[in-house]
Length: 89
Image (cartoon, rainbow, N blue to C red; front, side, top):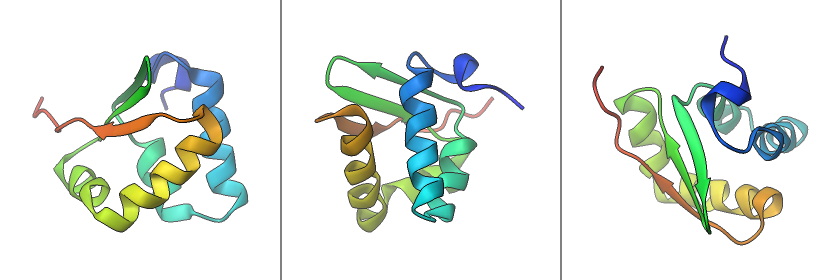
């Protein structure tokens, strides 16, 4: 299993986000975020690359994005969340 260090550029905050989701029993969202290919924070935007197109579709749902945005704001501050399209590998 990959560690947060190998998936993105802000592992401490990412781990905090995952812990918040775990504490609040947001297990569906937690599972999807644990499986992402990568994430990175650039200025005021958090980019997330889902593991596959099914996860990408999950993140594109408006209620999921609203929920994710709330938890990201709690963890990272006021940043925008963008889901990068999954690239077939």
